[in-house]
Image (tube, rainbow, N blue to C red):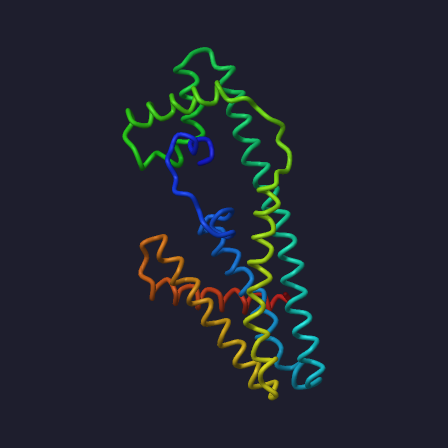
Length: 233
């Protein structure tokens, strides 16, 4: 419920399409999801290539890109729903604050919404001051219809392309190498390396050890892919 407090805090402007609309956790999750989806195809593609040769390669590339396009569209739609849900929670919070009997009651309403986030970041007196400011801001805020906005569509577009573009590195070896089996091994190696890099970048935002987190993403992603293949995914 961070959005309710955002007008009270200074935030550095984000540059670039991805950072403007998606927070680091969301953007890395989109990349991770796309890599796992792509690996699910490529790690199980040896039989297809063995049986159908170059035609199998073409079908594989179409399937990989098509699957990620489909999931990119789904993720984009979910992004819009999440934005509508978040703003809807703020509207509900504002209505509750306006209906509060007094200032202390309004602060309690805000505390129920924000304590989960600020509980470990500030002392009680500091949180009370913040919650009072949030309550006063919500009381003065003019509520507008909660419709789909331009930023929602741009965020959905960003989410879509993050998922789709993760399939591009998997396709490059098949375009450059004539030997389909060698290209498949190179493709899998690239995707596994990208899993590690995603974990490494994740560690930058969590103060984790980059090598440990990178290897965790690599192993964990491999396990998820193995489960998906075993379950027919």
